[in-house]
Amino acid sequence: MNNRMRFGIFLAPFHKPGINPTLALEQDLELVQWLDRCDYDEVWFGEHHSAGSEISASPEIMIATAAERTKHIKLGTGVVSVSYHNPLWVAERMVQLDHLTRGRVMLGLGPGSLPTDATMIGLSQKDTRGLLADGLDVITRLLRSDEPVNFENDRWTLKDARLHLRPYSNFDLATAAVASPTGPKLAGKYGTGLISIGATTAAGFDALALHWDVIEEEAKHHNQQVDRSKWRLVGLCHIAETAEQARRDVEYGIEHWFNYFQEIAAFPQMSMPGQNAKEMIDFINDSGFGAIGTPEMCRAQIDRLWKQSNGGFGAYLMLAHNWANFDATKRSYDLIAREVFPHFQGQHMSTMNAAVRAQKMRPELAEIHAKAVETAQQTYAAEKEGRGSVTEPAE
Image (cartoon, rainbow, N blue to C red):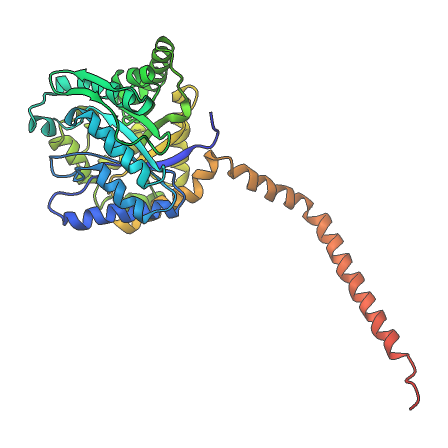
């Protein structure tokens, strides 16, 4: 596994109902530009169609817009709710984006998390995981082979289906998981990556090592190769120069975020206690659900996940949450890039060790340097004295 941990965000996004949606979406794109500047590796855009807060209906449209405004960062669907779409068109749209971005796209797939989305198109939550499995099977066949795909279930019929264009790159394909084994089973069966969205929830944290055991067992059974570097864990952080400042920052929006999961979104794995900002902040920090505080706290959170994973993972994605205003949010991501990345990307100790070596050598080298300066001064003084004693030639 590559030892350089990647960093990114999982951008649902979350916005307070009633605010200007045009401005909210624009700020989401501005945030991606900021992350690109700060050397983040990845952004994953969500798909949601109801409940008022997660207002991005098309991750593909967000990717296309963000690609024109950024240079390096990779852009993924986090996730396409496959049960809502014909899988042939999902693959077609992603291949087109792969060409337009010159290989900066990633395809994340899931069943769909909001029941209020599914009910509008006549789907029950009990059917969405089965449709994810069917859709992933079709999509992997389309992407990995030129052979025509024939498939039929209660929702889709494909007859001699082929991609119109072959992919530009061998882009990452990943499935999503919270606590159930569905995502890991599919990742192992098809040799995809895994996005553990609920990695810091109680159920998700306890299942982390199990997730990878499931992936490896399924991969072996289906003769697939899997790689921990393609395992992405999602967590929560807001960082400032001091813990007190971080707590003040998140008073801006943390109550709305909690209320969304407590009262609105039918997503029980993310339901959390807390009646006011203080209780909510304390829960995030005390439960291990996230880190609201200093860079050291963020590093400790990632270390904890690394140990629980029982072998490591490839990327840490922060769940974008809008707990703080936009300026404080950007500052948090900047601090994480400056003070957290180096500890997990092999850069921290190299510069620290260089400083220690230089410090140990400083007395000896400073003395040599001082003597060299003194010698140079003496040499110059001698040269001046020699020039002054030379007799001027007669005219």
